[in-house]
Length: 340
Image 1 (cartoon, rainbow, N blue to C red):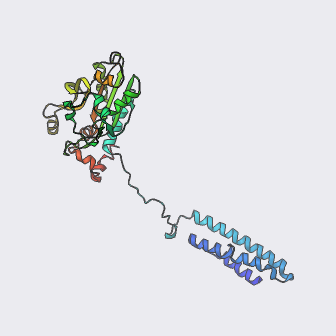
Image 2 (tube, helix red, strand yellow):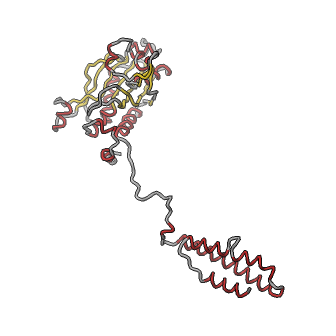
Image 3 (tube, rainbow, N blue to C red):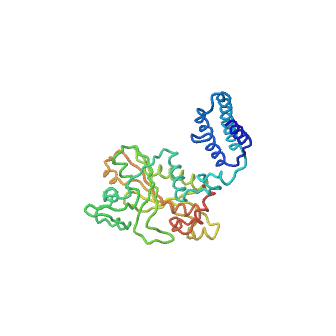
């Protein structure tokens, strides 16, 4: 028996391992419950009495040697710079990992929202499926009003009418119904109109609409606010102009243009040779809209504005076809990594 102990001691001292599996095999062979050393302790009772003292001392030394050797080999394996195939952690993500980026529409949305948040506007959101009141009637679209024909609608229910919202003005109605002036909010979101899909139009697109209601709000306040936005978004030297227009929920109404310039052939094409480019619609909130939402137009006034995010992104990034924003073409989206 003593000869066996000497053989095991020599075997442990000369042991060399190259992987975690080798180390585990050593532990199982010598230190596990069914390993050699626990079995020797079990056999200790059968050792003759005259050999028990010497055998017990040698056995304890063998156990200490095995445990010390295991600890040293484990530390050596962890600190080793050589990695074998058996040491590969298959749960670690492959390298390099290609990073994604934000969608250009979302980048423009965040930029526009950030500009207005800096001057006190809060963000409001609402449902994409709206009833007739919030989508039309409260915004001065009475039944059979010809202005309803300006927006081809996807109806999803009748009696009462429910539709996919055609603008985020419906969110503004909900804000006016539930919040007392002063109100200063912007409403970004997805909207739907039954239009033919082309390079310049789509049945799904995104809008950002703004609303400011307080005492003594004037058309001049609106112009200054929109000038601030234009110079923050398009550049500090940007010029704007307001042209008369018509929207059922604002009176007077206007279209805002920014001066794009006529330096290139593309500038002539985009601006139709005028140098000016329409970017948003705006106007003073119609008193009927205020009344519909429970706000006294004799005390309060306000302005509203709205822009299409895709159109703004097309101008910012010189994208010629609106459909590219919806096709998830990786070649197109990869071009915006630098912008993000």
